[in-house]
Length: 474
Image (cartoon, rainbow, N blue to C red; front, side, top):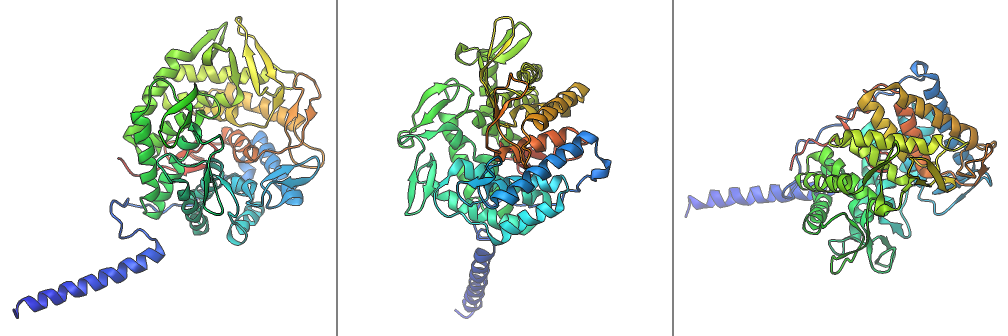
């Protein structure tokens, strides 16, 4: 009896100490005592910004374009999500999506005053009141905050990223998440009770990164459950919709908007952390896309979706993804060339939102608008990094010159345009958030050395936010 007492007392003290430790850990990091936490967290070293004095003239022009776009937004629409540069006003809520989308671009380009103002907004004014689109919040806001942390090692960005991540967890009432969440416990869908495939498949990079950085597996578990769903429910290419109750897919199959970024994230999740299920799925889908879609008319190679002979600008992401994967590298480079032709085939030098490919390979404009989109310059960026062929920088220069000529607003900012086969296209009145997050960033990166965001260290989310690769292998 006597010998047992010290042992019980020691166990009691150990339990008390452990309990105190867990309580403190909960309030500091919430996850220290959870099982299956990811270890070996690395401290991020701030990225060194290239000096503007060492930049090429075109890189400095793009940098000044970013300054112009952001300053005009500050003047007319500060804190608003959207910006109308011609009418000089903001629109939508004051979540500051354009600010957060701009953080990493401002930092990388060394626009210090503008970055400081954006960082102050995050520190003092950022909030997520009202309804939230889960997909948009994830790629723009969570991705933007995690990227800013990855580049700067400033904890304010990680702290707010965690708050955003906590809110997004409410979307997971079932394995297939809601598309919209909001006040009064609202959890619904953009389309009549069904989830959109891209909304479900475009969470993994941000959720896995957040789990890793906070040492909390909660978000990672959600992604692993979704990947198990894809693994058990793939027959042919992905379809547009998923019923969250039955988990049955419906709608058209393909690679276009509403589906596209799911394929992208399966590859990029593999690159981010070595996820084996994601790699298996991406390999299956990539081969299906190549075998069932890739067509050449004349000298124009493209994925002929449902034999419609059309390409949407957003589908040009696929060139970069194939280049990044390297398995069908030549097809990726050839499709990127086709996407470049979408620009060079118009008088304005800017691409139509949708084009038709004729049997002789000629490109005909079908939707006569240019919406400042990043997908083509994104693929040019990957083509440049892989080949270092000067033609890709030449293409980027031509595209930037056309943007600067036709989309720049006299009073400040840049805008969407239409009537692209006119020498003087008509300016619309919207400066897209993705223009600052992606188009300008990729254009600028094309003229940087490879050690500025090297691809063996960073993965870009679908909104062009670079995330540091994780030292985890599943």
